[in-house]
Length: 539
Image 1 (cartoon, rainbow, N blue to C red):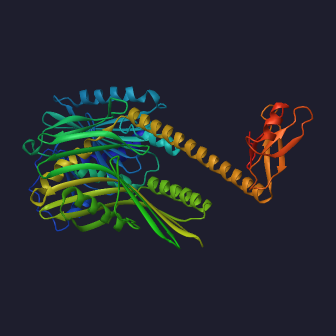
Image 2: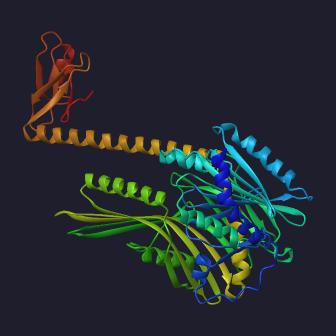
Image 3: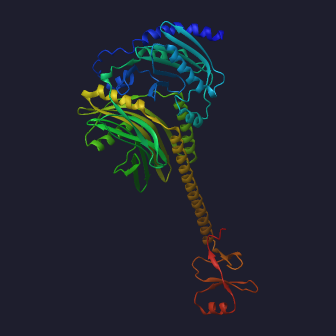
């Protein structure tokens, strides 16, 4: 316990400063400045305002915010470090709030190995320090799937620092959770998030209602999303090839937010006699063949593809104003490296030159007074093969696109609303596992189908090779249907007669024409006609 007391004494001065800052969190924000020249940079790196849930904070690279049933959660892009902000009913006794927190921790600690906590009463509130905690899956349920799919074990011996601070009618409960070995820079980011957190005045908040993202394939709700009042909404899980993906759309006048999934498959074949190109574009499960070849080779080309889709949708031209690469987490980089290696190795088997590019960028475009900001994530693969007979090129794009649309004059309001919608989206882990299971079964079925086709093609090629060999060497195979005996006999390819067999001695006679007198005599004497095949009789 002395160790915890030392840790507590070390942390208390820090939390005293934080407490003084947090006590001002309920104060109204000053009037925000007009948008800078770069809307995209303001969205990516400026201050985030959530008009649905009534708070704002400074954005930090590598961190995301989400809203749960009774908490606001900030998590780093590795899914390991957490800042949790909650509000509890306060009637002048912080000890009651601390007891409620303690009962909650006891319920969560059933799977932890002897967590230990130390409490300290300060003039500004209560500070709690703990260690020996397990991974907080209750704050991030999807990580149970991510750890399993990536073959990783969740870190243990989590550290916790919680501050309980009094307000007028509610107490503010701020919790930091992080594994051992967390860099100081990461802890500094957590403290900066807390310092930057502010509540919005009630009159600035936008009312909302919770709606479901339904899964029509199996029935039931796969996820939930908060929709502002007055917005039309639809959301469901769609099937795109074998993938199961969430799509949603909400709109009010010229304000619009949507999530789309785009797949592009292009192939070009060039021979000495001419060429052929095919491009299939799939958007949210619906496929169309394009009248001309589309062959993007870079993120910039993918951005132009998206502009083309928008132009076809709105019948208005869209001009790209800015495109920015987004930060990739260490986990994303590792998965991309593994996928690239597997793709290049697979292409090498077929003697193809291949390239695999991960895509993660944001773009801003304009059409008149309408502005669209989109976040894009996915992959771009290219492969080609050149030989003396033909040259082939293939391109595949698979991306998810989250789009915000708003009139330029309503940028602040629209982005405040859309930020709240994005922070509210959550999915049921059981529904996600169900989608993964269906995807796996479909892929297994398709793989078996492809293997059967390859085996059939291989057998066909083998039979054709044997047939040509026998035809060129004036030989063929005959089979006795009664005994299943197979014989290799001499016969020139232009000969039309059949082979017959003596039932007593087993002698073979060829060149017997159909409906001839010889055929009639052989049949009367009990001879049997034999089956013929240039390719043989495989079992």
